Amino acid sequence: MKKRDTDLLFWVGIELVSLLSITFILIMFLALANAAASVVPVSSLGQIGISLPSAVTTIPATEESKGLLVTVNSSDEIYVGTTQVKISNIPSLLTSYISQYGTPTSVKIAADKSVSYGTIVQIMDLLRQNGISTIDLIVGQAR
Image (cartoon, rainbow, N blue to C red):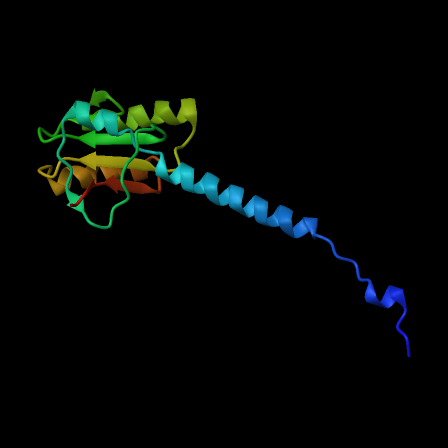
């Protein structure tokens, strides 16, 4: 029995919906990876002069500045961005920052390795009292 020519032909095509889905997932992955990798201004850390504790399992900081950075140097001087503040002024500074820019999704703390644990805990407590739930500690890359 002879097969018809139409039986041998089948439709070959590319499913555009799945290609669009894959493209969207790749774009979202790259956007999230870029946002997570570019939140710490390393250049400001050098200006303040701190010696970060080191860890092997850290993600290196980048040069781009996004988000809010709190820095504490070896003299227990506290900087928000590059502005020096007293610990008692942090709540009012955060209130003005939140009213101007909105609540930051996370705050980064970079502290010199000689800074007391109590100072870091006080800063973290003040940040949490002001509605900031994600606080990251910045460390140097161990070699």
